[in-house]
Image (cartoon, rainbow, N blue to C red; front, top):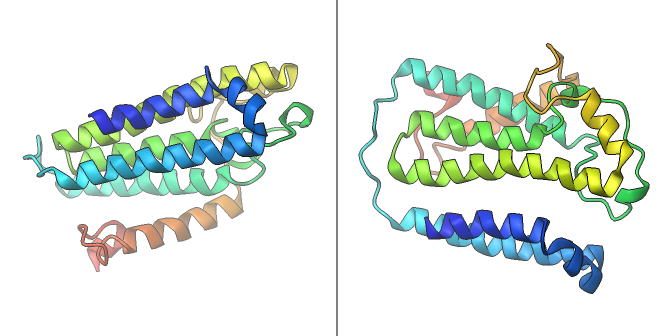
Length: 217
């Protein structure tokens, strides 16, 4: 719990109340480097703590139905993640104040925060299939950071970009499919399937239970 709190709190504190002061002192590039270093340290601490404690008993049994549902949710998360790397206006940019934000495209017609939702859905999947107290803490922290962080990102980007971000918000949705059904685009769709196949295949070599279609083979 301490490691997860430190990981989440460091993101929020450095991204918001400390951001302007750190950028003024170290520059945008220096700030991004410091931010990444701190995040990596606390992420490593969180993983070490998670791996060090014994696993508790699950609160429910993850049957075939839960695994199948988790597999589909993970596929959606993979598509959102791949698509989020294609012309994402929320990604760090030293010239953010000068940026022209394009009309919503691909997964951004589904949600303006596809990367954050991909992390949240990934964490949700692991709660579904491994409903233990350690997973509730770890994955719950990731869900909280992703979704609350997305909301706070909207506020920060609106301050940095002004009307450009307000127009982006008015043309997009925070909640996936909040503005109706939309296709992710073929690059995100194909890339998401490939990422999903690779990630689920890696479960077995890493000592985790077989996942995805590999659990049927």
